[in-house]
Image (cartoon, rainbow, N blue to C red):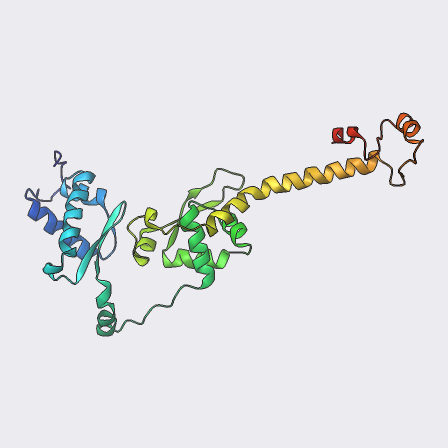
Length: 251
């Protein structure tokens, strides 16, 4: 291991690997929620890298079948957490009288998917991808702790940016976002949103060209009959007939 940092004041400096692992286990057990690796490092006088090494070893130990543990150690990019194994959830709910939580609504799942695959995102971006207002679903996911605010976008109005949380990873059984299943649907939707502005500009340009053409070429203009085309072209050279090559020069 790397050279140890100074542990928090008034705490005994633990030296053996076994003591350090037991201290980490005790902290995680008492917390009941994810603890940051750097926080554990500050308490134990270890670098973040060393804490991750210890925790990874502990997680492997809990995962071994012959250890007969009913708990597991969950590892996330910046945090770790002790949790019960999923197979024992029914027994825990029955023993503690815990009602089974309701499933997320379809709208909440849609919003969560947009955030997970495109984060960080603004609420207006979510609205554009889904095509409907997402205020209620966003607030619901914030209340449930599945997404959180992560600063503001450097743009007019400075809208809030949203990302998923470690709780999102835990609920969906993921260790990191790169374990999300591949999907093309959201990529297509995102591409459509990103291209919306460009399409709007193109439509406006086409409409402008039509407006200009309608002003340059009178609405009562009629195609010249054979023998008259040359005279008409000379008299109205600023307004070439539609079949003329000069039409391409119009805005």
